[in-house]
Image 1 (spheres, rainbow, N blue to C red):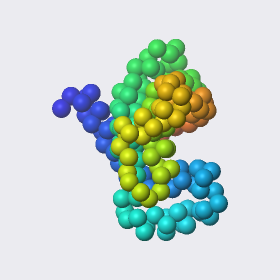
Image 2: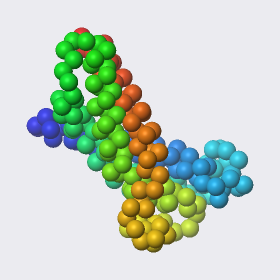
Image 3: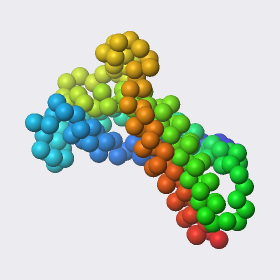
Image 4: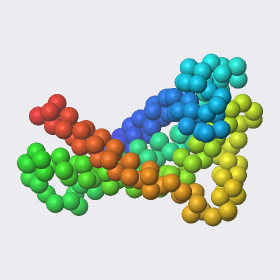
Length: 186
């Protein structure tokens, strides 16, 4: 199997594995929604309440998470070394390598997070529903699109906060990964 194919497959599987944590993301989303502030006290309260709807309720929005995580990981792991190649060569400088690893991870993470932001919006709207019928991504998209004045640009409302968070977090993640790689394999 070619390296690119292996990388894409590994990244997709990593995204799918991460999606197994969907119940935690689901509970967090419900606790963040102001319409539930007076209803749920904490994570355990949400967990117990979901139980009456069955296991499926914990995984509401799972398809959105899979469609966000899989492609995001493929893009991140497929492009991170290419992005770093466009940055100045720092030679063997530990600090220089850390900085370029941080910058390449930050830029790429922020870019991917912004591109995938509408999927995250759809996921959040799906996960704010407790009980009742499950909506497809398509139906949720149209509901959100109409509720935001039928403008695609409004699907990106709040993206600047997400972009800022991603700059820092993905910069740290990528730089830390590279530091650990150097420590473990040199």
